[in-house]
Length: 83
Image 1: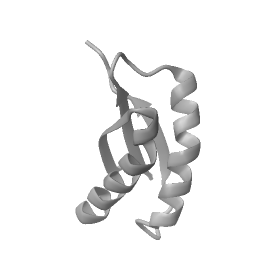
Image 2: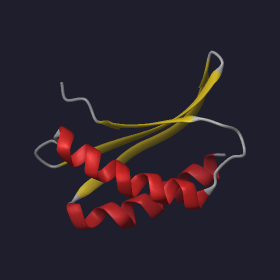
Image 3: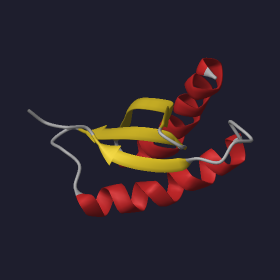
Image 4: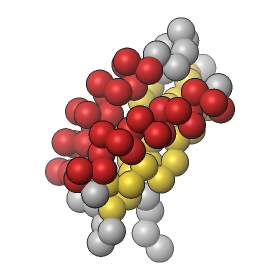
């Protein structure tokens, strides 16, 4: 799975670089009964909700094409936390 996630991260970065969005992290983990694919995005100066929504549309297409698993999962596209 790790290799698939690395390749997915590279593909997502190619698609999102035009908007200067950074793919910070991708994880796939089981929590309770559900599997979660979490994609964390960032941008210099921060990333707003509208940008996350637009990026999610592009991310969804790339993730579907990548077909990383046959299991069902919930995809979360989130922004990197600022501290």
